[in-house]
Image 1 (cartoon, rainbow, N blue to C red):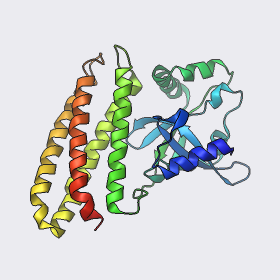
Image 2 (image 1 turned 180 degrees about the horizontal axis):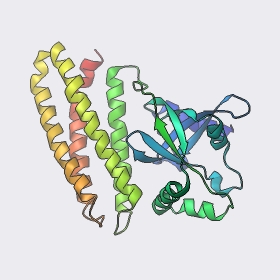
Image 3 (image 1 turned 135 degrees about the vertical axis):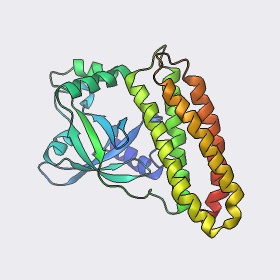
Length: 272
């Protein structure tokens, strides 16, 4: 652990996963592994890629160096690790991708960021790709229900902004990883709104019956956003990125207005 890495970790934890400088706008997580020889806990900062609803991908590039990074050796010895997203902390099981699955996935990541291919060209070792699958969950790292809601909303805002930038700079086509990024976001929003509709909203109505017009309005917006998400997922099968950007802009506009309204109406009650 050097001073620069520790500063990033401290900033990450203090700002719900957001950091500035060279990592501004990057998808980052903190991975805490158990030392293969020492048994001590070690935390490192890693970029990651969405993969499936319950797992993300990390790459052991070590900037193209001759040796695998320490965190990778630690995971080989003890695959259970702790992942921090800035909003959630959960236990994960690490699975090293092998053979064809590794090669196909790595090619997908190189398509998304050619730097991975450059790192591979610098070293004789095969750069590993590791899937981190969540095996335990927990509440957001928040001091109140209202703060938790805002943090989750901010994570969606940030991810949507990242995807918009990726689509805008992707050229005429959509890469496989970018399609997965979009699909994962759509699935996450569907899940979040379903949790609100089946859990949060009924609980608030039971306590505050006067909220009925507000909840009715929020449910109508959920329905509208769901339609936009369904249309967006259909467009992911189209070969061109140009058709996707207007749909993403429509989603950003509708979602931001929805989240702002929901926060203004519900957070004061959640924190009371």
